[in-house]
Length: 308
Image 1 (cartoon, rainbow, N blue to C red):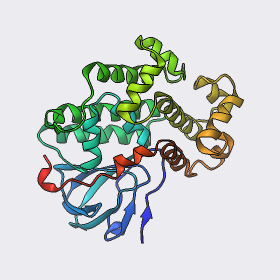
Image 2 (image 1 turned 45 degrees about the vertical axis):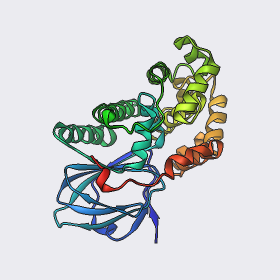
Image 3 (image 1 turned 90 degrees about the vertical axis):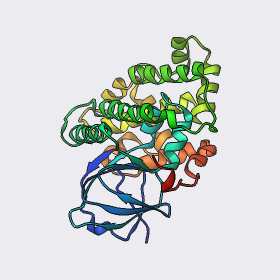
Image 4 (image 1 turned 180 degrees about the vertical axis):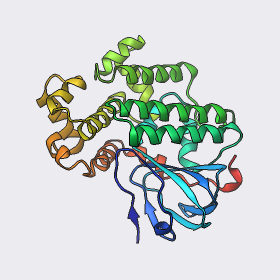
């Protein structure tokens, strides 16, 4: 019987592995696995991989995952993040790396990369579980983007040459757009604002981002705002009116309509039950609008022999 992981916006845990042995799981969002101790074996989309401290795993939503075996001392770290963080981080990277990330679940942690990974999930644990701050989403996003950028920089020389490449000019534009978003997302939600800052037209910015990332700048802005709103509603005691102002909406009513459009529920309904499957609704609405995104999840996993 297939079951699914808990639907937190983002989370960190060190689960007891015993209940998961031999059971199929379908992640609801992106998961990252780091092995702290022992060894094991995992099946990801019917491909078998060995698990040890020298490898990390990226498990995408809708992947079929099964823990096959584990030694008695096996311990692992599980990190869950919404897909919007991956898309935000990808704004700074070559599209061929994103395709490779979708296809390749198992990545080697060679040399200092293992220390880097340990530092990453240690900081993620503190921010996610211990830090009391309204800036949790910003910090998680920055930390995740930094870690993904390090992986990209250490592997970009190995990217397949037959993958479509983005020109340096376009890639620079996308990178600068991503940086502007992280700074100004709460100040301005208009594509025209970011286009003006980048000295291009909104039409051109939309064409470049959509042809490279697969979604429009407007959808990226909306999804980042949606994630911000979920965090503030779930992790603060601020009123909905205060949150509306913090996110740069003209008034509470406008924010309410935006939230309803993204999740088909009101901010009040979400605050009453913050564990509702709102992230799944956000994913579903985006895939319905841009069905070509499904192609990213339908590529066949590559074999162990091609792993670096």
